[in-house]
Length: 126
Image (cartoon, rainbow, N blue to C red; front, top):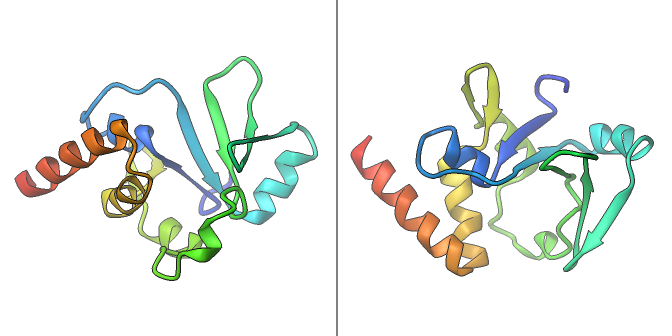
């Protein structure tokens, strides 16, 4: 994928830092890259989220308009901010823990609450 047009987010950003094992890889991409990928792969819509699931993988790709509620969040980081503040680890862009924490707090599922604790503990020790 083109440099500067994607980042690995969600549990992948936790797993690469050794915070917990991951089950899948979520990738956030620019609108241009989303449009390009959507010509090749089908778009799925589940629980008000649009995504591309790469065949025979555990990789899901999200675009800037994948989350229908995101436009209602005035304090949400923009995609440009998220890309610019990504941490390059082993040559790949991973979402900053600050941004992962923002979305984990917003979603508030049981697994997110556990991840929030892991992220906070990690940030305090570094």
